Amino acid sequence: MSDQKRTQQHPDSDLYPEATGLATATVKAHSTEHSLKLYAGWFCPFVQRAWMVLEEKNIPYQYIEVNPYHKPASLLSLNPRGLVPTLAYNNQPLYESTVLCEFLEDAFPSHAPALRPADPYTRARARIWTDFVGSRIIPAYHRFLQYQPARDGPEGLSAARAEFLGFLKEWTKATDPAGPWFLGGEFSLVDVALAPWAVRLWVFDYFKGGLGIPEEGEGGEDEAVWARWRKWSKAVEERKSVKETMSEREHYLPIYQRYADDVAQSEMAKASRAGRGVP
Ligand SMILES: N[C@@H](CCC(=O)N[C@@H](CS)C(=O)NCC(=O)O)C(=O)O
Image 1 (cartoon, rainbow, N blue to C red):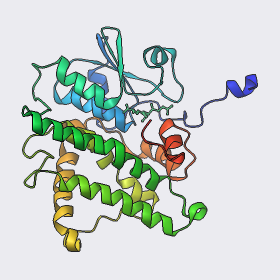
Image 2: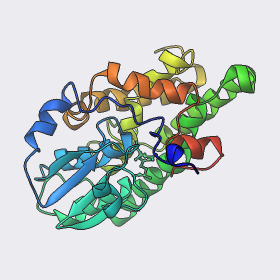
Image 3: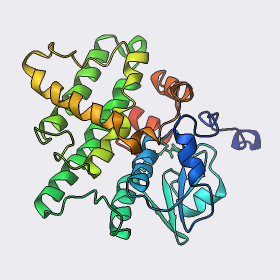
Image 4: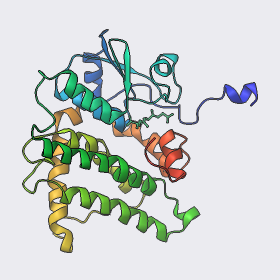
């Protein structure tokens, strides 16, 4: 590799540099030095999971904005994968968003609310559906978003959409029927696992000709499951920790445009292109 090539910028590194919208105040409130550090990217749905848990539980922390496509040494020294979210807990590194969420539950037991049910069976079941988000829903989200009708054939777009909606339905069918949350009245880590993608479903209307979830009353035999989905996703959109970790849509747009055109070079985009799962 030539020196010139080596110093070339990552093609996805041209990001808006900081959080905007309601997330601005959240970042500002956590800008001072603290022994618990969240290395984050304002735009990242995986970050949003850990960030929501910190906010939900009112855990003191320091928010550190990093560009994971222009990885600073501070990030790489903590996480050899160079991905956000990465946590430093008294200088000890941790990463992987679902692991971070569980860790925050374990490390701050006196911080309410508890985001895991006490009953072992229900807790294990919540983990099954958290895993389902990572192993099925997110990969299908990317296959649909990165699908190129002109390159891969127009009919495949409907198949990618149907696959994605099929997984959303399967997850929704496993929820408590009364809701609004996955487990019923209590918000939990399984809601956290999916919430960031639920509030990023607009990308399909914007870039892919429509998400395809039927309007109220038009769901046919799936009416009940989509009604339940709407109830959950409305509750998610209104959740304080979700709103206060979101930035302005205009700054997500160029990032998602690169996924929609299938030119993004993030580990997630490459994994999806290669038929692999979440990196
Ligand atoms: N499995 C990881 C995925 C994290 C991830 O992919 N983060 C993205 C930002 S949304 C990242 O850091 N990308 C940097 C890269 O692709 O090089 C998790 O759950 O934390």
